[in-house]
Image (tube, rainbow, N blue to C red; front, side, top):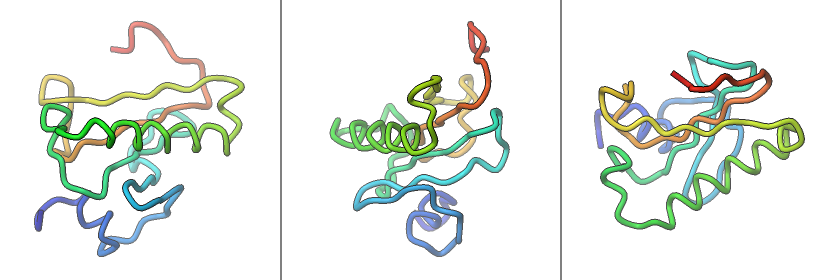
Length: 112
């Protein structure tokens, strides 16, 4: 989509520090981090929200990259949280599905 910031990041027209990338997904730091480590993992294909996922393989690719990020930063040993916000009530602010990977601090429950 022409007006989607995450599509522009995936296409490389908006530069970001890439934390990971493969043929299907890209990971980069969140601009408004909620933990010492806070990355976003997005599909390169525009999918507005979790409600619009038609191929479940993309979810495996998102979570696979999250696991790689956790392992490469040592959070697989201490713990990390993954979150997908879906819709306005869940605070989804960019309508391109994205997986938050948060780590580096004690998480609380319930999350909010």
